Length: 270
Image (cartoon, rainbow, N blue to C red; front, top):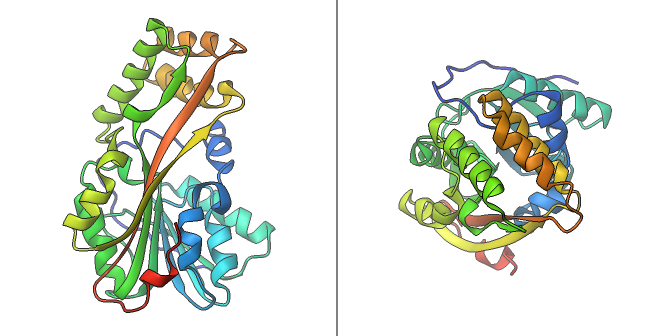
């Protein structure tokens, strides 16, 4: 399998989602059916797709299977993540993915190169999401589509929600902000996409419920510990032992087109 690996200048941002093995395991639980279902009506064989913020590649491989013999370019700022995604593709013998370690602000792509851009769980980590959206628009051909999703922490459902857990969640949100991100980016996703010059096709949301709450709280707790806030990490881990504890994460998504494209709207389903 041949790859096109390129290194671009990175930004000064610190991504709240880290690249540790535990974080990779957390993100690897996501696939195209669970976290990218909103893009599948727009996919067809032969397309060229850019996956920005590909992470460990578990969604990327699904994109590649849908567009084969078309190609997917998978981009992530972390070389650890692109290496993990490459290993996954090789293990599944998926040959139509190319990898690049690059910033979302400086994509290693020509103008009007792709039929579609996919960005899951990315924009909430960016201090300049509008710049990234402008870059997505640049690399899309006229009529190409954008499919993106981000969480809205204001719409999370956490039960029970005692004060120690509220303080822990607030502390994690502050970490995201300090790193340049926006924990409520999903609430502004559709508006920002339209302001960036895209034609909105569809918007929606879903709740991701964690059957094992320690899966999400462990992920958050590790980052709280890294930020030297062990008391908040301990509060989350203790809360997760409650058999009645529930954690439902709100994701908002949009699909949109770069003007102008005829006939794309008919491909979008509710």
